[in-house]
Image (cartoon, rainbow, N blue to C red):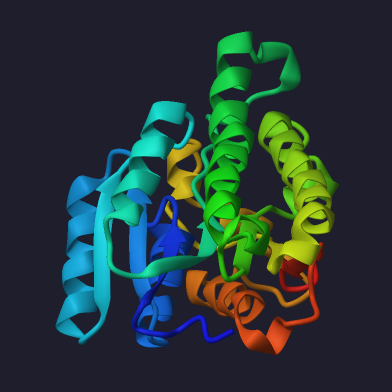
Amino acid sequence: MNLTSPTTTLLVTGGSRGIGAAVARLAARQGHTVCLSYHQQREQAEALVAQIRAEGGHALAVQADVAVEADVLRLFERLDAEPGRLVGLVNNAGMLERQARVIDMDAARLRRVFDTNVVGSFLCAREAVRRMSTARGGTGGAIVNLSSRAARLGSPGEFVDYAASKGAIDSFTIGLAREVAAEGIRVNAVAPGLIETEIHASSGEPGRVERLKAGVPMQRGGHPDEVARAVLWLLSAEASYITGTVLDVSGGR
């Protein structure tokens, strides 16, 4: 399947900044029509769409909170109104709270993290499969979920809740991949390590990558573009026999 046909669309959730923005930008440069969703960063999303269009690409931005089912339905209805068919989903939207130990986490925090990181990914994948599955009249496609090395490292003393949510994403990736493999849909995940994005500042420690980079065999943090290249490869025909796989992009950490 040619995922870069002018009549096809790639959806990147949480695409206004960080890894999501890098994926959207690279996807557009590779010829995809890109729909990026955003929760609150409207100006950043619109600026990215403007940049993609200025470079000759095709893009649109749609506001949606993936943790809210009605928002997800509205997002996909907006996609349905576009001329191209959906052939790819990047479940990138995610969040973490400020650094804390488990003994200081309340239920409201846990619900926020799991609703966005896990429930949101399920809902978006559900809608994508409904449109891409050959069993439902679709032509197939690919899904890439954003996991994290934290799923296996646990993030003790900082983000055990976030790590647990990404562990759920790993299980989800394997299960969904096997469920829809015969319907023309491949499902994989990318597990970034320490990446230089704004998410560290929102967690309360802007310099977290600098503090921890000595524990990375490559002795540095990664860049969003390095993760984006792995995502686009998994979406491409070059990865045509790969499904149910979690690919680490972590500098060996």
